[in-house]
Length: 174
Ligand SMILES: [Zn+2]
Image 1 (cartoon, protein in one colour):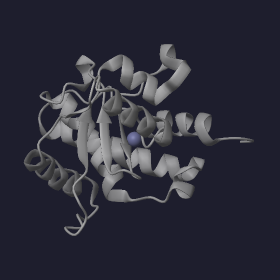
Image 2 (image 1 turned 90 degrees about the horizontal axis):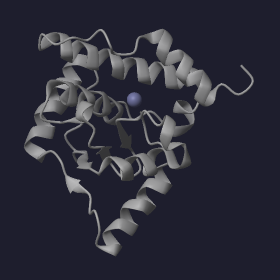
Image 3 (image 1 turned 30 degrees about the vertical axis):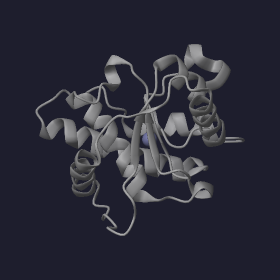
């Protein structure tokens, strides 16, 4: 997923820091982000611009992540991670499936790093075609990463799943 409810999430993070509770933690050191970014670049074909700062990967407790990402729709929230381009942040929750020490967790980061590399303008992403193009590219890189590590990639969304989600998000009168 990409920059869901960016302003709300940032507000939440800022409020958390100010209140001194649940300060988001840096989840992955920059040295590891750099290695994964190189892999995301190879797998997606998108070049790394060395002049851009690396994204910062932070983790939040799952309930707070769900609130930041999905607000009142927490019960149906299935977001595992998000790249927020306005703040160059990748945020992840603390579900087992998002454990960044595992291959699946790293695959999730590869997905978000493809969003970082793509730099698709917000207006373009907020269309069915833009969303389908960018999410498909990110999921393909995720699948290729898992496959290259000998892990099961059968659960990764295919283009049809991605299209349907993008229609539900941005379809409007489709
Ligand atoms: Zn995505």
